[in-house]
Length: 301
Length: 206
Image (cartoon, rainbow over all chains, first blue to last red; front, side, top):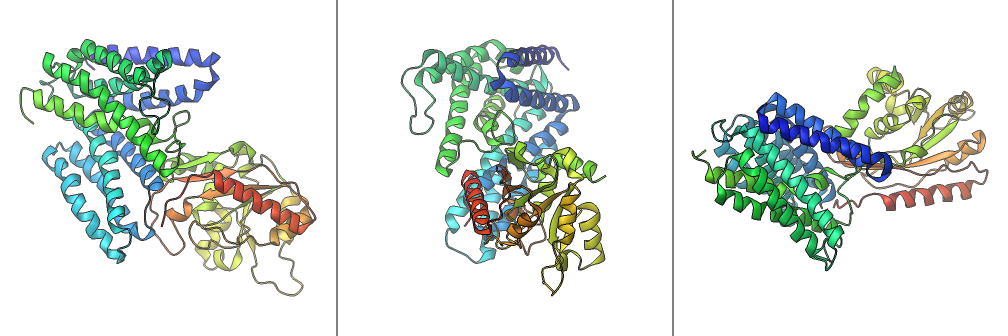
């Protein structure tokens, strides 16, 4: 493991220990902290084992996120074949990611799934609600499998391109995305003021959004060059866009949950809610991080 | 052995079936007690046994239809040896005492899992509650814990063979005291199921 990753990993360990100590006096964060330990341990193990292990771990996350999505979203009971197809695409996409077949990964869901899903849905012969059902499934596949897959794709970046390797890029993406949520929450609580989207996410304020933008932007400016090796322009783009993307992912999931009449997407992660509640920001930041990096890398891949 | 098996199944049930349990602490830790659940899928028995407190699993027996589960030797083996099923004859014969084994199990300090709808029925729909349970409760005088299960009927509905992943939820209600008044007991049980059902995540499944 290279140096920035080791220091970053130790910093995370320190934060987790601090969280566990704080949890002695704050019973409200106990379950949340315990779940963070499990998440960190799984990610640490996957990083140590390499790109294939990371692809497997994110494949499992995508599977659980997709399952949570199709369990909440409106589906037709005759669409079992189409749902089987959606699930089958998860191992297919992540196998392609593990094999580093980037060009095929890019078209499997955005081109061929969008054609195959409505075709498979014809098998039940029911046209009522057909278009809406196809749209619901396709949107779910994109956010839970396609965009999340970009996180695992970062592992395939050639060692020469990034100072801390693909693992450093993924670590950077995960830390920045998670801390952006935290910064927005803290800034919102400290400053308060007018709400930014009262009909979608009543807890969020303009000050929280701007405070998070500033804090995350500063974090990216400080640790970004070490982990990504990118120059001033791409770092500035990431500093500006990643916090906005994280916020957008968060409120998009809030709007979906509100539409479906639930507060949390599930209960599988004690203290956090469901899988979708945990990965909501990441579904938006992962492709952005990947594309900014790929565009500014010295060799095209 | 059965305890170890169902404890080992817990992570699988979490991962494969996406099971979340609400108010797990309401489940009985020791018998005699009855757990009454709605029934939509064969997975219900697995989900319930996995969710029981570890010290209660060995004493827990699901009650199921003899004509279905004892039809083939393999089914009989799985039903009795792994799931610990107590068979109930669905067809009453003159002079038969179908509740005999159930009462004996309760008297020995056991826990029964009973599906008062009597059958799996249409997926994710609750059928009418049969009043056989109230008769058993009256004779045994044990408390009943209502459990509402959601989602298993979508994973493996009646008539399908391949499970399709969905998340499922289990909501445990507070135990109901035994009552000799059949109508009052059934009304209380229905009300408990309605309350649990309204607390479950909405199903947008058309």
